[in-house]
Image (cartoon, rainbow, N blue to C red; front, side, top):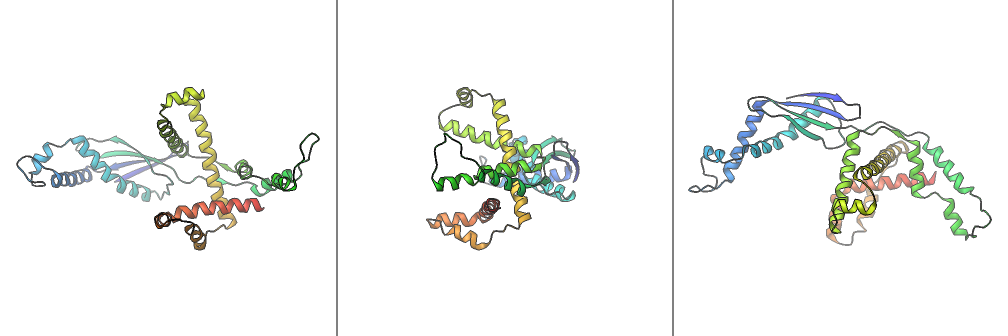
Length: 286
């Protein structure tokens, strides 16, 4: 196996991976053997039909699809190791060459974590707080209670995140945004189906086109991913940590044994959410 690495201008990482025909053959034979074990043909018990007979009845395209499914995880992992990559998303795989008696070629597009420049986020948040604190009451405005004034003087979470977003610089790989937009569109399609609508009907009712909707989602994805990366960098810089006791406190909120077991299986995800919350709390306290 050999892999050629190419860094694309849009931030994506492309791997062109050659798979030796010998590996394809070996995997093909293993796949056919598995089919033989599971196949029932007239006159033969399950798994007892001759290999040649079973193979003659197989859809070769589907058989090779299974071959590729088995080969890809290993060859991709080896290609990543070969070039010392640290992908942060699953790759988009394209089969570019698949001829019998010749090496196969697949293209894997992925990306690594982009460089995040935080900028003066502390200064930006301090300026935001000062602006909120020094907000002047204007004639004609309805007087507010003291607790309402205190609330108005404190930045909201959205305002804090806006301040972080404005101070950070990062060039996101195209595939990172594309995958998030695809996820958002998929969710929208599911939601419209539940309402008994087609996506065209939804677009018509909102006065949008698929192009404008995709553009909106791209901007939303850019903001969301940028903030996720920025908050992670801030957490690293500020030494924000999640301890086992923090996770235990969340587990205690589970109302049933099943719910608790489900949360315990997602401890890593819980820790990431708690770290994000702690980071936002830290920003609010600056």
